[in-house]
Amino acid sequence: SSGINAEWPLRPGVDISCNGGTGYIDVPCADGVLACTSPVWSEYGGLTDQLYKCGECPADSTATCAQCVAEAETGCNVKVAAPADAQTFECFDYSLVKEALVASKIATICHAEKATAIACNKPGSAAVAKTYSVANKGCGPCSEAAKKDKTCFDCPTDKCNSASTLAFVLAPLLAVIFHAL
Image 1 (tube, rainbow, N blue to C red):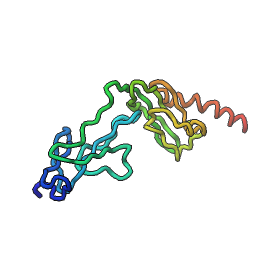
Image 2: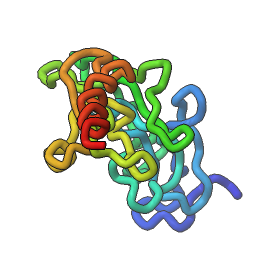
Image 3: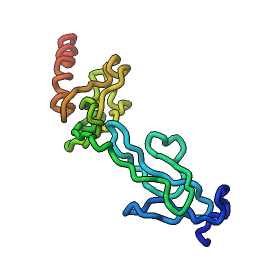
Image 4: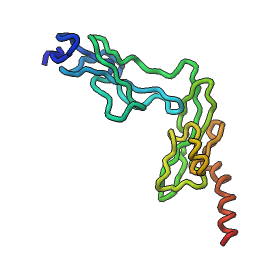
């Protein structure tokens, strides 16, 4: 392979490259590659894990992968960064451990634009441990539907969704259950 994309429909004979590698450098693409990929920055999620590289994004990945048409020797997949005035804060993620949702011991770094309110989320009183999935690793608010059906609880301060704050939600619920028995 000569590195020349003979199949390139617009500019035959042009070497195509994308930004990639471990140092975000210009990387030559294989023959026939017509696209470059890059991560996406999103509110509460920050920068996705998508690599800068030659090729197309996986199917159904528009929330995590950006794709551009490679046009020449310089990669079209420009470096993605958080907005200059973005803020960071911390929230706790939850995972299923022995049939219970357990808060992580180390908080997740969350990202939001400067004007966006800080919010963390965690399982609500009606969350079913085996099927519940914490939104954005605990970063950001709950959906209105999840709040309404009490499967998600959100709060407005840094690290406000720790396991100790979950006890305040569950204690009254347990008191009602045991009183009913």
